[in-house]
Length: 407
Image (cartoon, rainbow, N blue to C red; front, side):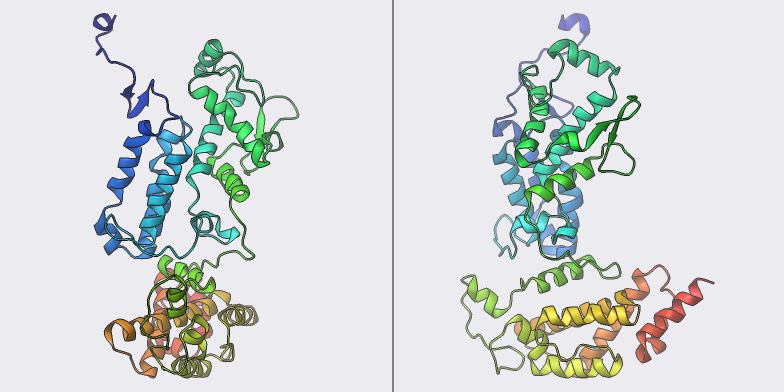
């Protein structure tokens, strides 16, 4: 037969189009090629040279899609998903094959949606289930497709909630997804419904009324992962690495000396490296330290809405948001707020690791410059933003720039 068809003779299991065929995909050993593929994308030099923003996008876009081909046909064992998620987590926090870094936030909090207080990376388990469920959607919406007829001829028709007809191969896993979701509290009959005229099906979770993996993955993650009290602040004019920095700051997940001590790191001194008068913690470093107070006083002279009296970072950020609503430019206020927090942190690191600290006025000018460049370079209408007007009144500078750009 092989000679007549002019093809090779292979033994089961074998690989076809990059996927194993004929093996028991419930066994982790058949997923080893995908694991090795993940490892090849996470070389040590990338962990060393990429910022946390670069590592974030690599974890989200590249590693999040790397297993799509496999996940769309096979249900991955939990041990494999755990291994892959562990690799993504280690890489995001800067770890390599030889070094281990502190993971400052639980991975469940990192992968959940930004609306739920995470970074929106998404879990691989939710991706796997959402991709497999698409076959059930296609089975409903493509009844006359050749592949559908072949499957039904070989295995019989699927019955809701039961995998008895698809009792072997990938179809058993595909049909079993609905039961797994039902155990989570997700009844698929609430989301795909027949049209009133009986001409097809509609998907309730997307405006197109067509099934999308993105919407299903978001639903699964929303059920599986813990919710936060507030959504993640993600500012469009701020680089990804600084948005992540803000997320960590508002969660008190920066490596300040008190946080390092809580995680078992030996610290020679708990004193603030800037003022040496009080133990270093997030609120002291950002708001109560003498240098931070002086810089806040200068910024309050620059913009009259600056929350200079805040003693807690959460209250400080709430003041930034309230000020933004008052001046009708919430993004501008948030940009300057992030520039302040990030510059204070960089100043602290410069003192700790290099023994160098800039003068107060130089730090203030750095904050003004960083915020100016973010708005000018990352805003679609900010190309003609005036530095001279910005130094006098940043809100007025943005208004005049945007008015000029809209002509």
